[in-house]
Length: 159
Image 1 (tube, rainbow, N blue to C red):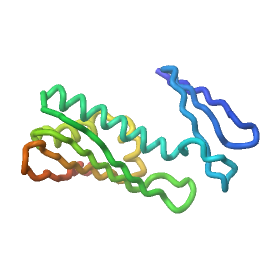
Image 2 (spheres, helix red, strand yellow):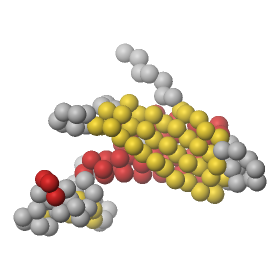
Image 3 (cartoon, one colour):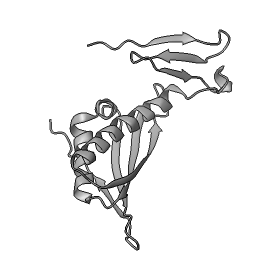
Image 4 (tube, one colour):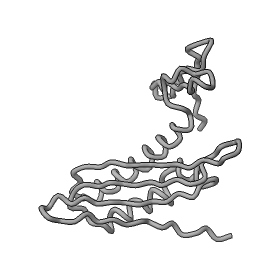
């Protein structure tokens, strides 16, 4: 099934544009002033990291909810390093899941693993050019409980 995005230039003299998705949602993008933009929207490569965060977050949240984990909050931080030369693809990406609640660390690791290896299409595409590091921090709500930190290490693919 094909996905069709419609894009319109909003400023004929600049770089501000609107993309309309098949689900009817608009995304405004722009460039920095030094390359002809007016800085009125995110850059396309920023949206790639937004897409990764959204994709894997939806997976992890769905899995933790199916496992009936007592989730009280959730956030993410995603940081990407790009190649120095064009095309400036992402080469290193660091993903940090911040889970709040008295959740089972094994459930968090399994949810991250399933997202990374099976469900998240965005991470599957980005792994073609980037090494993705998956980390997590669980912030328990019990008084005096220390945060639990860890990393999910994806097995190397064998040829």
